[in-house]
Image (cartoon, rainbow, N blue to C red):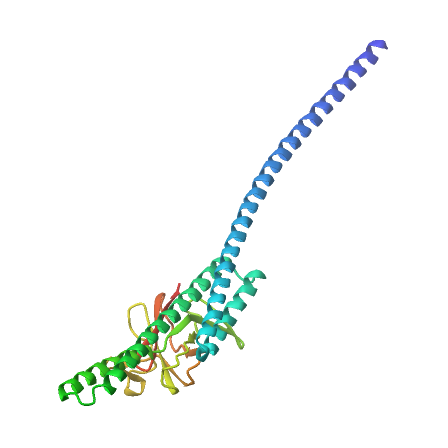
Length: 305
């Protein structure tokens, strides 16, 4: 009887020992898993913190650049009151971008490109202003020479005519319009909604949007904007190659993809030109050229994959 009781106790102790061993093993595994999770989470948190810091630094740098651009436009508006409407519109672009960045609308990488474009446009305006100032000084100097040389010889008059002709050519060059913030997008349609796509089989329209520059010395009035879209092989997309789809550029007749008539009043204006695609497009890079007044005013590229 006692022997049976001893055996029963030994079996119970063995079961209890095995249970403790199993529980110990389970706790050990849990401890290891918890340790791994802790270190992994810690590492991920550190990485997230680094990324957030980098984004914050980039955001601060972009805002600093935009505020500098804004101040320069403020000063230009004071210095050149006749161009204040141009600089006011540009400041509106800058203010909107500052607001979007502060409210985290869009990616920082995308805004880096836009801020660079704004800085480039400001630099271009400053260059144009310096060129026009130089031309105005030159014209004033020539007028003085004309007034003090009324009794000079025909040879001198001929020389003045040549110089004035050269100055007129320079002023004409300064009157050339330019396109900024060019965006060419192939789009598909979902009902009336336009959706950007890179699938050549789904493209229904090509949308070309840009900002047409302000230019105080350009001729105002009705102007024709020509869009030329070239396929990867260089062939221009056009509904026809007849005379009705041609225009003059550099003394030659060339084909266009789409045109749009606009009324230009020497002020900056946002434009979008649409082309309805009539055939299935190819994969590859497409080049878009924009023409106004027989000049190329902007070029961009889009890709179909």
